[in-house]
Length: 203
Image 1 (cartoon, rainbow, N blue to C red):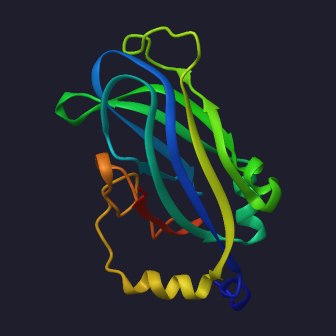
Image 2 (cartoon, rainbow, N blue to C red; image 1 turned 30 degrees about the horizontal axis):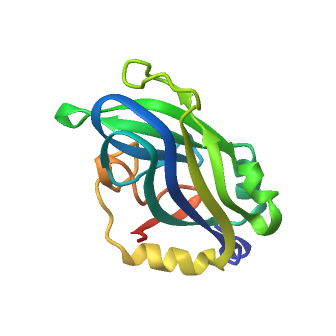
């Protein structure tokens, strides 16, 4: 990496998964949201919210925040603009496995082109992926998120912080991090995202 690459600034992506509505299960279950973010080189970063036990609810609230930093180079930004964030409503089953109940996507381009690169409480309609677990309802299941991009430090400083952290063995899709539900909550080796994700549950 050349000197100019080290001086490239970064962007901080602040993603908040807020709530879900119109969820009607056929039986009691533990629900959570899983988010996939593209990380370059055919890799993905996986984020998971906490589990909430419910059977039916007009509104399920998570209000959890994830913060990730990535390179703001032209190559990285152009790559992300061609990708999408994928959100899945999942139900935890026995033996630690989970199944997808619904899925929704939001293009990264929508975030970059929004005013001040910020989207506030945006509702995404879920496409049903498992009719065996969900009851048929008049209004489709949906989740709401908020997201914004803010200027971060230069990549050189991020690299210094990353090198201070001990390397872990690869345990998830080539990433050395282990998070909720066996998912990835940080990824120091990803080419696009340099630091991911400090997760903070908000009251």
